[in-house]
Image (cartoon, rainbow, N blue to C red):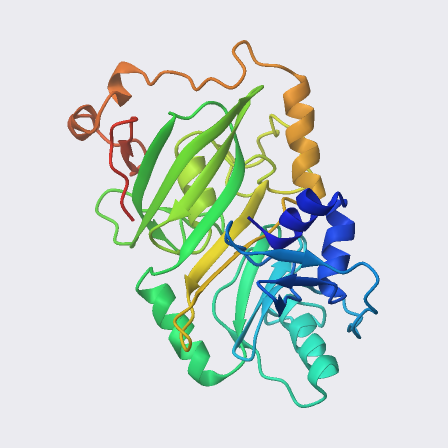
Length: 331
C-alpha cells in the first residue's frame, strides 16, 4: 500500500493531509524517516505519525515527487505536459521541472538522465536517473523488460475480459500516424497484455502491462481492435470520426512503476494516484449504469481460446490471445 494511503487510513487523515504530513517529515516507517508519499510500504512495517513535529524545509516546486534517493527520482507527470522538449525547444517540460527541482534542492548543477517517456496527454509515473551510471543501469532494465509497468485506460466498447495484443508496429502508417504493419510490411514487434477491471456504459476500464515499450503502443493496439482509448484524437477508427464519449484528453494513466534498484538491488515500487480528470470521466460513465454492472461480457465463440484465434485470420495485423481464469499469465 502507498504510504500516504496507509497514513490516511491509520490516522484518519484525508489523502491530501496524509501527503503533506509525509512530505513535511512528520511520518516515520519502521523507525526511519520517510519523505515520499508514493513509496510502497509493506503491511508488516510500523508507521508512526508525529502531528506536532516541526515541518522540514520543503522545496517549492511544480513537481510531484513519488520517490527520491541519491541515484534516481520518480515523478508524477501531469497530462498536457511534454516529457522532454521537441525540436521546437519548449521551455516547460517535465525534464525542465526535474532539473529545476534538483537545482533548488541540492544547490548544485543537476543531472537528470531520461530513461523513458510518456505521451504529452498521458499522465503517470516516470523515472529519471541522477547519474550516468544509474541511467545505463535503468536503461538496461527497460531493454530487458525487467520493469513492472501497469497502465490504466478507459477504452471504448467491450473488449474480451482479458487478452494479449501482439502486432508489429510501423512509424508511418499514413496520415502522419504510426500504426500496425500491413501484410508483408516490416515493423517492430509490440506486445500488450490487458485485463478488464470494470464494465462501464459504452466503455471499459482496463489494466494494462507491457512486454515491449513502443511509441504509442497501447493506443495503436486498442484502436486496431476497434476499442480506441477514450479521448484519443489521433488513433480512432477513421480520421475525423466523432468521439463516442466526451473526455478532455486520452484516458491513459501510467499507474504503477516498479523495478530492482540498479545499485542497491532493493525493490523500488511506486503508485501514481489516478488524476482528477480521469476519475471524473469514470464517474460520468458509472452514472450511466450498464445493464449488468461489474460483469465482463462473455467472449464470443471466435474468442473462446487461442486455438480458435490461431485458425482465424488476424484483423488488421493484430494477433490476439485471450486469457481465461485458468490461463497462466507470463511477462
